Image 1 (cartoon, rainbow, N blue to C red):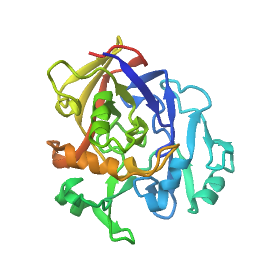
Image 2: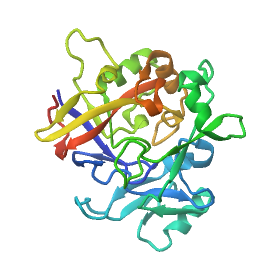
Image 3: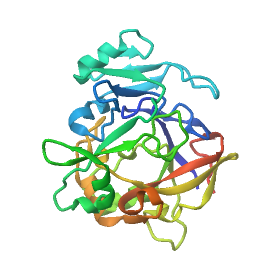
Image 4: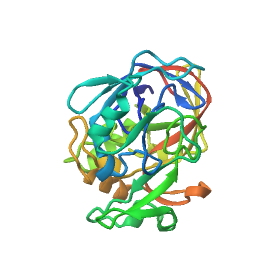
Length: 302
């Protein structure tokens, strides 16, 4: 059983980097979600989970100028804009350049302000009830505004279950298996379930033990630990709830709401964590990192 792929996303909601090696610490992959775009008017961290306002973020990509170093500030990143031009994050004009493309007053930031939040759209999908995506009581309790389509938009604290300092939605590490991606392809062969739609940090291969049945093996992992490579230990916390972002067009992948519909129809899981307790459409699993270190594609996991 091996690590099939590793990913890091230097700027929240922008395309990231495919890695051959990665360093993990208590806050996940070193450098992951180190930067974010802040909407000045609302004080909200920009997220493509509200597509009408922020889907264009997925037309940007970000890569570090040099590798991040444990215990040091994140190095600058090179941003590739939708037109193919590039700018560094330490360019004094970077905020103005982002404002012009995003048509909002924004700032590129590296330190999450106290109490900062992000928003998430509860997308209307033909054949899927809103409650099939997430618990109705949580949707109602967190909804702060509506899209002009009438779809609800919820408001959540950044990194609610992760150590502070990075711009995660919920947790420090996101893991998905090839087994789950393969199962989704079997269920909806006309859709493209590329791992990039799910923005994982770690893709695990060969996770289908004999007799266990194909796909969604992560459902049973919360409460368990796994060793990645020779030194990294991860503790799985709760299944990964899926959202509209998995359906959006990006880097050669078309917009496809059937990708979310397929998850909602085939893998709704009851999550026991009190703050998010209820039935959710899930694929993948979140984790903490009790013991960090370096891992590489091809390393064993057990």
